[in-house]
Image (cartoon, rainbow, N blue to C red):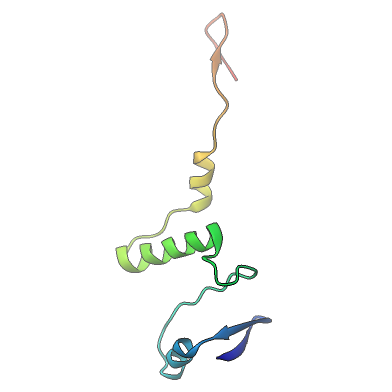
Length: 87
């Protein structure tokens, strides 16, 4: 394993990444601080889905913030005795 400094953060890259660099090949590597060897949580999920959307489906990934906002429950709308909406 080789240790590299990436923006002040030390990361360990294995032989696969070192070989990619040595042979001037493109590759993507996502390091999420504090996540160890996990999937990166919701952030990692979004980045993984974004990658596959772009590179396998050939489409732009969704705007995650807009989707999250759209999924938030909205206050119920009630009607007053006069028939007007009241929130």
